[in-house]
Image (tube, rainbow, N blue to C red):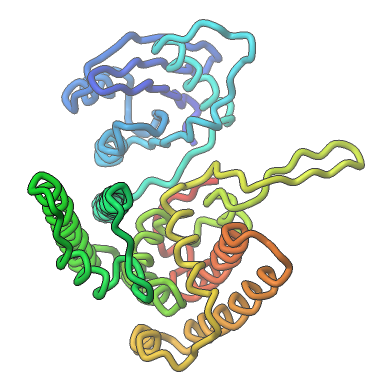
Length: 379
């Protein structure tokens, strides 16, 4: 490492970037504010010195990773920092962009910051796509609630033996007629919105499958391997890969569970140990799809499922063996916890946490070693 290394802290906003530099001699200088534009960033780097003597950092936020990608293309080492893990002084009541940049530069030089993993452009694009589908499913849930509450207000009840939002339920909704034309107009508009949302979700799911070939070969292999697990379809596997990138950056399953926010809170002192609900301090998108997948394990093991065997075709035998072991263990654990009187959501959360352990094990088999991956790790 060069002896004249300069550590640069950037406080990045939509239109401006506050800049501060921690010099090798120990001083920290505030350099002012520049426009958040590629040409302004290039001019700043040219003034700061050779790229090999610069270390740049900024906090992860709504501006995304284009700045990171620009700095990497210019040959400048850059770290994107986890905002929640930046050290702060309890008594400091003055916050400005310049002070934030200076604090980043000072802590970066001291090694007190935690860098996150930064995806490449293809992985980030897939992440946006799967999150767009998530938004569409949330809109669909709200639309369904709107229809059911509308029917409830006007005294219409679903016939016995018909499950909600199935094919028979759709036929029943299509046959409903209201005595007042105004009510019929409202109901028809609600049903038309449901149809549009169903088409929107189907279109996004097709787009997700079409986007998989744009990923790196190791990520494509990981998506296929994760789909061998029960409850993990291609869309769910693509969500896991887009949110995690590579499973090799986690030293074990426990850090991965912590990243998803699925580990219990703990407040221990001396001989007293108190654990509470899960932290929920990790990736909420990852946690949601895992809990959703965990509900599939409430049924008895079905190793002969035609759908599951189709997803397991052409997959390595060790991967299929892990998926089989996961189904047997998680189904048994689901029923054991249920018989103990645990709440259903708590049971599903527990199963989701253990499912992450099997996902990590599959990642160790499918992904190449870190030296061959060529991607940065994060804590």
